[in-house]
Length: 392
Ligand SMILES: *Cc1c(COP(=O)(O)O)cnc(C)c1O
Image (cartoon, rainbow, N blue to C red; front, side):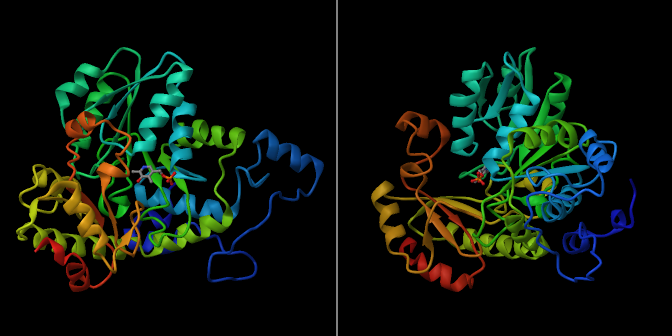
């Protein structure tokens, strides 16, 4: 259905879409803390349950505040539908449960969120869904891993923590040639910097916990895509199984979307400045940031993204001791594994997010003992540099 908002720019849609003002004339979006909805008659109740009349039934799957967030995120990603979830992980689970069955096969990037790897290996594996993990940018390996029963290709780009960038159109073509779908976890870029659906992907996943909130307050997630798969299949899983986003959290996230574009520009500018500075420091071996000319996929990132995002990783000379020393010397940057906050955070992947891998697996994944990941926040860049002065 066409509406005037289709012509609006990204920033306008981020601020305006989804709020259908009530008779109270409220300017701000309302929070609806109600578990159920009242019908005018038994016939209306029957029509709502039967699906012949649209409208609210029960907040496990319909809530007006959650719907504002869903409509707003869907238009920003360029999808027909978004369905909100209680967390990013439940959004990924819902995607798999609604689109896969026993005997199906998934090909996933090796460089995805650690918990997503465990979901594929330990949980889906138990129900007869096999997953093959391949290096994100090795397209021959993707091609080789695809089988007749492959249903999903799953990636994050840029990857965590090494910020490798995958060619989304190329992987979409590979998937579609084999009758599979490409799923992109768009956590690092958000729709403000990258539109995977426009590049050929079929579904976008979000951990709203990260940049969509952007201020480290709530846990939430979403799936975005077409009306059939997301509007029917993924929504059907939510309705039946109930990993529901609360209206309070939805309100926080939709407020986050209003400033998303501004924040992502500011995160990207701060991150680029920090990455360029780090590259010149004597104790830094290597810096990983798609905005640097030295990044192996800098040209691809420039083509595919409208900004380079807020995550910078770097390898310190001196291994783990040097890395821990630098982390422990920070006064301002928070030592926490979360990312996508206005507050900068610092992590040592080898002993935290990737600590469950064997040293060989870490070596293969390129996670060195001296590697440090910084989620660059919105503080003054000079204060961030001063906090990392140990690299000089
Ligand atoms: C955090 C994260 C998730 C999981 O989201 P939760 O909201 O923590 O459940 C999934 N993918 C990526 C890339 C993440 O960073």
